[in-house]
Structure formats: C-alpha cells, structure tokens
Amino acid sequence: MAEAIPGETFHREGGVVYDAPLDWAVYKRGAQMARVVYEATHANAAETGDRAGHGRNEATWVFAEEPGIAEGLCASPLDLFIDARLAPHAAIGLHEHTTTEEVYYMLEGSLVVTTLAADGRESTSELLVGDAHLIRVGQSHFAVAGPDGARFVTVAVRVP
Image (tube, rainbow, N blue to C red; front, side):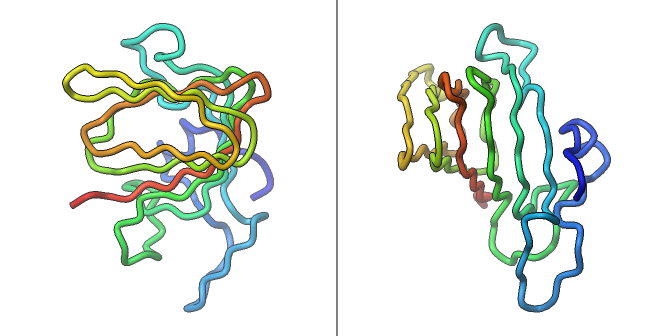
C-alpha cells in the first residue's frame, strides 16, 4: 500500500486491508497494510462540537472481519484490529455499539473518552499511555485527543 486511502472511499468500495498474498501461516508486513485517513472518525451530523467528530485520524488496518472489508482470516468473532493516530484535539464522534465490544489501548499521547449508558448516565475519563477503555454493546462513546494527539490500538469483537 503506497499511500493513504480516504476513509469514505475505503469503506464505500470495500477496501483492501492487506495487499499481499497470505499463506496458511499468517504473517503481515506493515508496508502492505491499509492506511486509511478519516477527516472525522464516526462523524455524527446530529451532534455538535466534539460529539460530532472532527479532525484527522490516520488508521492502519491490521485485521478486519467487519462487513464490507472482511478478510475471511479469523474464525473468532474478531471484527477489527486497528492502530489509530488522532491529530491533536481531533475527536471521534458519538456513536453507539450495537453489535461489538471494543477496547482502546493507549500507546502515545492522551485521550479523553466519554461513555454514555442507555439510561442517560455519562462517565468521562482521561486515558494516558498504558490505559485502556472498554465499550460494551448498548453503550455509546466519543473521544477527544489531547494537545499531543493520541495513538491507540483498537480491537473490536462481535457479540452474538
């Protein structure tokens, strides 16, 4: 993969997650993984401010089994595995998890995450390097990168 692909194009056209042959023993090289740029991750036109989502997210898609871009490699309920880099003060828009649980694990920078429960409760926490966040099915969340941006691994698993 030579250059980054706009997020809208990647998802609309059924993006290629890995651009090289794979064998029964799966080893992926970083240079062949899809690099996808989102100008607003989970943009939410029904919201304003940080809840609407804004700013650049450069995501490397490591594995994907989500509809439309599924690689067909995993027998487990893995949905995605992404290395995400949010620009300083960029925000992931408010979105609900209806079929997946998702984990963020912080590698660099900081991220302020707000989780919303179905009953209206909200909880906000700043995540620093080494911290993690779990979002459960039925919960919603949005997040804002700190002044130095944020790098984190995202793993999502489908819940039956």
